[in-house]
Length: 118
Length: 112
Image (cartoon, rainbow over all chains, first blue to last red; front, side, top):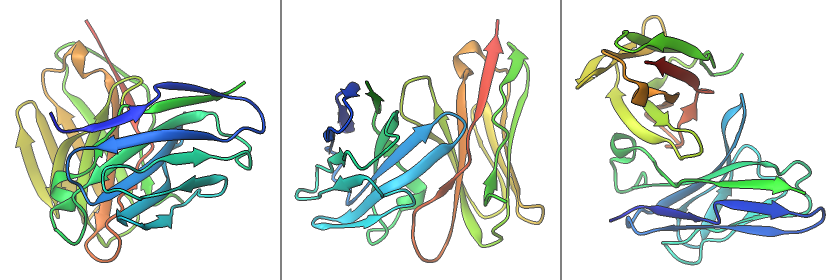
């Protein structure tokens, strides 16, 4: 079955550590996204990528980094510069604007990674 | 003022009730309107999609868009405990970026 796989489901980070969240999709989608979800704040866009080897900052990119070396993969690194990283992180993908239908099909989300600073 | 406003709830209703979930928005250029359902500790899933104004029905769910009032609604008929989830609205305009703007989500609890 096609879908998005996020791993790990739970992640604990020590102060000063970088951690990487994995996101893999087998939907053949061009576009991929990372969102952060905090209680009462909804979804906030961190980074997005419309095509391999290209990505753009979202609304809250500071303290995060991404790469898009393969169409299927869009890992997110939470760096030590992110001062408040405890949150639920969601990866999503969509067909993409150039192929059309991005809104009709909407996003497909992964199951999320809950990151906690210890 | 946020571009999309959504009451976070929680909204608690008895099983079988008709539920009305709503979002208001300020950007009159929004043309595409979506509702996502998110169960606890899961990612959101697309429930309904509507383009421009009007109603769209899918089983027990009806999505309604009133562009003159900048108001969208999701109605759930004969609500079930399995409908208990957070419902997020999302919308975008037809030009430019295809990144939607999300509401904060409304928590719905349907009790038996």
